[in-house]
Image 1 (cartoon, rainbow, N blue to C red):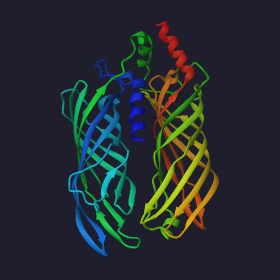
Image 2 (image 1 turned 90 degrees about the horizontal axis):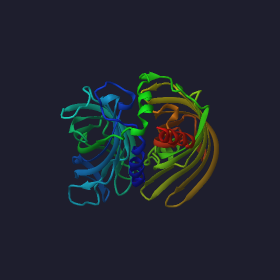
Image 3 (image 1 turned 90 degrees about the vertical axis):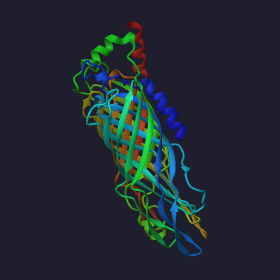
Image 4 (image 1 turned 45 degrees about the vertical axis):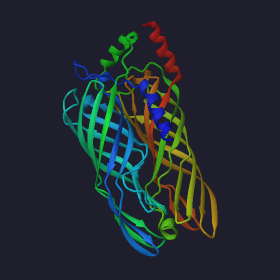
Length: 425
């Protein structure tokens, strides 16, 4: 899945209207500048506890370096940095020890604010926050949590290359970690991690054959209606992109039977596939989407799996258009099939459940080309606050939010129109 993320992002950037900062002022087509980043994150050693021959033993967990790949863009004319970070591996800096914990984070997404807009050959500070999946794994079990961490650092670059030096701060760094089925110990992971990265920033320049179209788009006010200048009533589209799902409610079932499991497990990465129709003049979308997240807990020889297959009918309306950033809000109805499975040392159990659940859909499009843009970058979030399943008379909350990190949405008829315009000009 990490390879999929990387290939997807490289492919998508061919179609992003991300332009170099220019001297003519704030225009629609110089709103953003795209970048790739390669770097490494340093995690210092930290005190941990293990259980050896029924005795608790303290030890220092090794420091580590984690290479990462980032995909992002500087938005709002150099004042904001929106990004997705993908860890590639982890390299321990200490001797190999089977008792060592692995403390790392999965895919993260975040935003940074630059008080002074980024410019070449100027040192620029930034502050921000990331939404990350933090993992603390031992040979016996693992604990995974979603956290908000703080971010700060400096940028310095020239032309296409930028260097980044920064740090992450974890406001909540304590894990109540199971060292056995019945024993828990408090483990404090590092408060700070540091990182260094090299950025390659670039533009997908405006086609010389489309100068007239580009000039018209740049005349659009910064704040405008999403439906402005819509010619066609509507267009069909198909979309695909990587997603992850987070449980927001505690599991009464796990609290009662598996206290050493995550009460709020986080899914694997999965694909969100959608097919829909956009009513251009109404600023409204109706779509069907398919997702199949899996939630899994393992520890001390026991396992628990929830496989979910969901087809969701949704409708949402665009609220505004700020220089191509176009948020939307709507409702959905999900047709869900759950398959619950657990395995312990002395029993196996499975159950299938079908449910229909209402929810909410919200997110945003990156849409410089208004209703004539044929490839759109869309971020979907779906929230199902009322969902739950019943296992042996005890509720297992399915209150979850599905985060479709970035979706490539293709409009075939718009592509045909754009090709005809390009040939014309």
